[in-house]
Length: 287
Image (tube, rainbow, N blue to C red; front, side, top):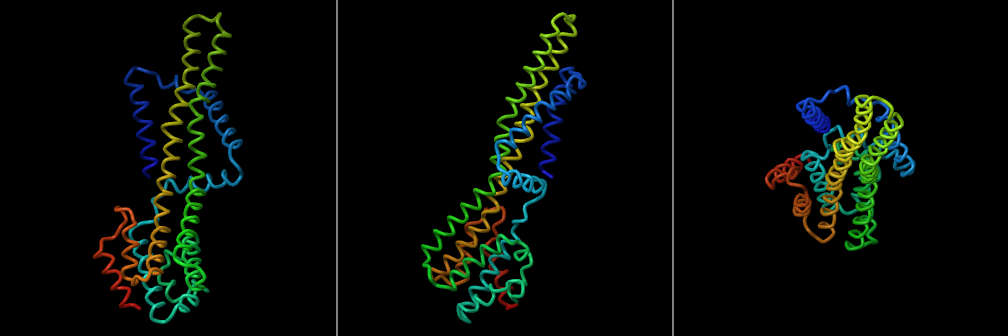
C-alpha cells in the first residue's frame, strides 16, 4: 500500500502545484506523447532483457504492493526450528537430522512451522545444508564459503528486476525528449499557423519531456529501489540460517547458536533476547 500512497502523493503534488500556477489540466492530456514514451520504453525493456529477466520482473511487480512476509514472527519460527533440530541432533545423534530432512512435510518437527514449510526456497536452503552437515564431508569453512556463494547468487537473481526497471527509468527522460522533439518538428512544420496555435503545439510538445521525467523519477525508479530493499530484507533469513548452522558446526550449544542468528537481523524484525528466550522455552516444553 505504501507504493500506492507514494504514487498518490507524487501525482497530487505535481498536478496540485501545476494548478496553483494557473495551468490547465487539459493541456497535459497528450495521448500521442504517452504512446511514444511508453512504447519506446517497453520496446527498449524487451530488447535489453532476456526472457528470464522479463518473467522475473513480471513476477516481482505484484509483490511490491504487498508487505514483506519476513517479519519478527517468521524469524522466531526459523530460530526455534533450528534450535529444536540442533538440540535433538545433539541428544539423539546426527542421523536424526537425516530422517527429518528426508521428508520435511511428514516431519513432526517441520510440521509445527507451516510458515517455513510454505516457503520452498528457504526450505531448500535449510535442508541442503543440514544434509551436508549429516554427510560430514565438509568442514565449517567450506560450508560457509558455499553458503556465501549461494546467498550472493540468490541476491543477484532477485535484483535482476530492480536493474531492469532502473534501466527503464534511466531511459524514460530521453524518450520524453524524443517525444518532445517530434512534437516540435510537427510544430515547425506548421509554422504558417497563427502564433497562438503554434504556441499551443510547442506547449503540447513540451509535455513529452515532462512525462518522461515524471514517469522516470516519480514512478519507475522508486519501484526499482523498493525491489532492492525487499531483496535486502529477504536475504536476511538466509544469513540468519547460515550463522546459526555455522555456530553449531563450530561447537556452540543450540541456545547460543540461535542467539548468533538473532544478532544478524535488522532491528525492525529482530526479537529481543527475552522474546527469543521465552519462545525457545515454549518450544522446549512442547518437545
